[in-house]
Length: 485
Image (tube, rainbow, N blue to C red; front, side, top):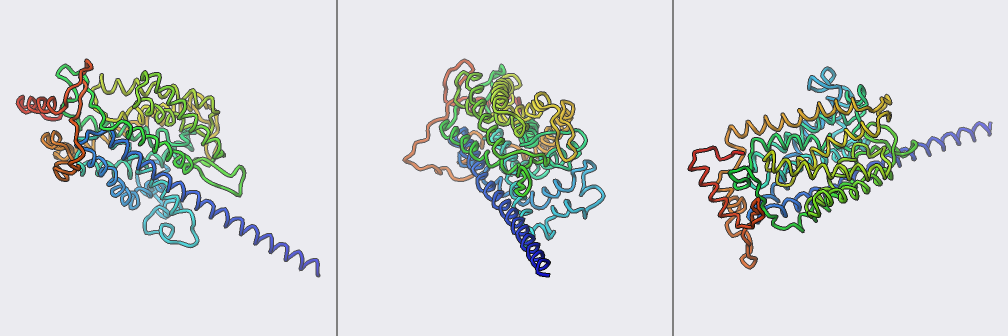
């Protein structure tokens, strides 16, 4: 009898211990995602700093406000419909709340009025995991922001940011960046830390918008040669990129699923095992390789050297859970080189005025990232069904995500253009968004505003305002549409 009682007491103690261990695990997971959310704010501080340094002085405040208001626009839209798009559309088209079953558990958890989507003492993880995805949405929308600098209307940008941040990228994430996504389950699609899911699709969307937005006045000569607007503060731009890089460690960490009571304690977004150390190792070597490739490909250009670091880490993100450090270093170096060449081609040959090179750095590098997985990690089992990764499955991702991003960006910006809502008038662009949207003397009188400098194709430095005014008058005099390429 005593033995029986002791056994029962031991069983109760073991049950209590297991329950406490389980609760500790849940609370640990909640704290983990909380701190990733906090640190990911550095990405958006970095985007604001980065773009403010690139913009001409007369557009700095408008640029900063655009980044701040990205958060104001994307947060409610992602809450009200972005999250249920992710949770309800993983089986694929037709687009809808799981097509047939709106009450499925995963889908129900994404509905704003559900019990799991509010203060709930029995659910430690749903809200904080939602916030991690919300920060991803801000990042995705901000990728587009820098490319459109100095001529897009604020209202148009915010509409586009909401479409990209709360509909487009999260739909492709449902298909290819979830354990239940049709691309994962059927084709073993592997994009562990969102090379294409976030960066590639955002770059494709941005390219579609740029086709309708057109270049800044004075960017190209009559012969189609590209001029260069000198940055307002290149050091601040580089500092912004370094802040983004710091926040990327939290971004990478938030892409993992913590499971402290099961070996090895971590899983990627597809629930395949990985470790936090391997992820951190790859991102570090990705930056190092990207800086190296960017430096040599651009012949030491500061902007492209640091941007090469971003391109490099995006290029290894898709396989960050499977690459060895040496592989990550070599792939990131190659990706950065290709991004530099792509950025120059887009600007000079295609004559697309992408102010910060977002299409090359994010778009080209993002899609290269998933292709590299198909080349260098083919056969790696992905997802709960352990479907082998293959170049075919990765190319299906390219074939799905490129049109999804580009066509939605092109169509939505085309509609805004037809309504004359996409671009600011020429006189506003020439005067500067700050002086028109805020007040003429927004800058302190004791801080002189140096005239913007333009670099002609032959390397000659000239004051930008004179060239821009002449180009604008010629456009009006010829009776041509003011947005031409």
